[in-house]
Image (cartoon, rainbow over all chains, first blue to last red; front, side):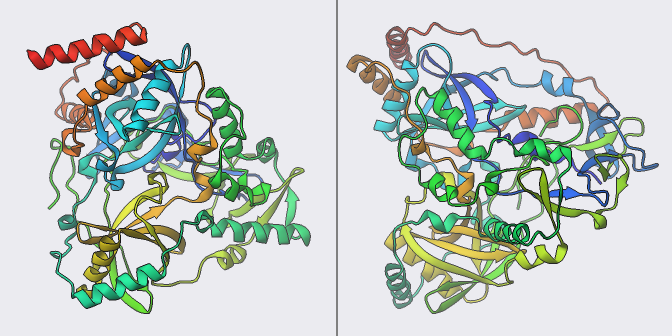
Length: 309
Length: 274
């Protein structure tokens, strides 16, 4: 049975800004556009049917299996087994909070105050329209004081708790989990903390010191993707299982890596050029063959109209 | 154990159970652990229903060309190549790519707490002792004492993970990390430039931040919208008509930076006095 699983809609990883609005602190307004700072992972393989055409997902009626259009589908909440309350787009829109276009910072906290467990997803904020002075001012003082601004805001019909953080003069919005999404050790039944024997602690301390090294981002490479690319390269060389790609797949070949493109878009929005600064993550990623960055869009081509989380 | 947070429409979530068992390999020591999810998504889950009979729809695969239903077993995976070609991958090929089964959580190195930027963090898990609790709490205490976190690798359900092993209030946590190609480093971008900011503006903005400074208390924030959605569901379930609250965007204020800063500070002072 189909779950209303629409992750692809909730987590856009594309090049366009999908939210513009203003950050306010006091009476100061900072117009910004929001871009994803992370993207979904790695390579998505395409599904191909026996006729060598791509396969797509569709919804069918449970009873007679007839394929359904977006207009035939409604959204329902299961109140008891097999019993649903239908909720329409209009109804959901009507209860959207009013502050949809505004991130109102009424609280600034020390960055170390935020437990890393709470961080969910990161977005870059770039100045949008007019002067960027207020943007630069907010970034400068937040970074200097090592503080983050906290607010809630609504994007794509979902409410987010967000920390606005400044780093290297750039603002980012990091969505945080709400408290009721975080479990406490007692919630999972962990035993009370017991005092360990000093000798045993010492033993582990020695081991930790012995293995202490600087962080190496190469450790964060996607090994599976690398093995997959190797296999693909082998097959290509041996001309094994190579077939003509259907039209639908060819359009996606244009334009190389999404990360690189997003970087260019962001750089343009920030008023600079690509190529400035250190880029550890990108350098690491760039070591992979170009094919690796070509991300297919199977997930995004989901059916039915506008969906909600 | 789980607190009910919404109205009746909210479903109770069962007490969390361990989702995986493994062994932390620290040097020559092997510390048996259980893994529990430390987060629980509280998304309101809707089902897609057929409009006519209000029953859940089924998902099927169809050919993009003919629209005919395709059985899952007959689907092959393909990797697109350049020049209008693709390579078909057999199930045996893909199986060979899967990592070897293992229960080991291998620590490859230890780094200073804070060295791994929080943007790498993906999902948090608690580790709990599985049997021998002494070694478990000793590892947590040692990490805390040295202010370090471990870089860990493990295989769970045929998938490879890299994570950060952290001590948190005497317990161990494992936070899965994103992969290198998922992150755009902030320092790959250049900050927007412009005329230098005035000292007076900086000072006023700093004062404003100080005035608005507080402690981060997660309990003070609530997913208001989620609760409104659940309320809507309850209203409709009771056969009542939902009330509609109109959306009214807030008026934009003028962006005269210095003036706005002064006015904000004046407003805050006024509040403090009153």
